[in-house]
Image (cartoon, rainbow, N blue to C red; front, side):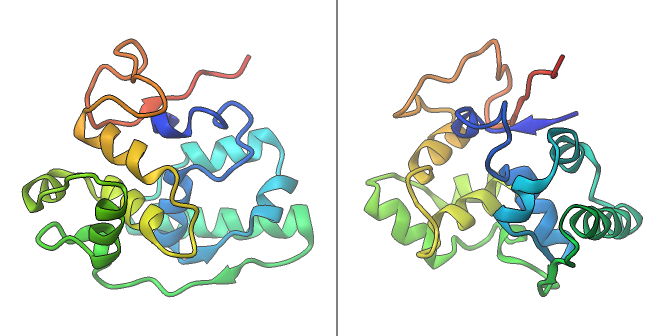
Length: 175
């Protein structure tokens, strides 16, 4: 199943940007994928990175190997490794990271510890990534609102495309 979030809807059909679900998998398997490498992949290769599982030790190892081979086959280069934390911030529901707190204040958004704790690790990962200073933060508020089940400032979530609040919406199948 391929998923994306409503705040990613403007690019999901072309996959011109790396979806958060893929970025999450990159952090899990310890590979840094450059956007220029992503752009060299075929749409089918990009879609496969979105769809392949990356949860168990075997899946993580296989995803990493597949990704490294993909980058090498398309670019002639090997991707950089990144450190994989033993217990990353997005796995921790008992404390809101400072960057998320600051970005919540900047966007005049309210986020309680109880709400943070109820988010999935993927949702927490997204908010952490979108709150970092080196990241364009324009999607932080729409993402937070989506996760809280509130109306998005850019568009209303459709119950047809996202019947379960706080869940990623399914990307349309490509013909």
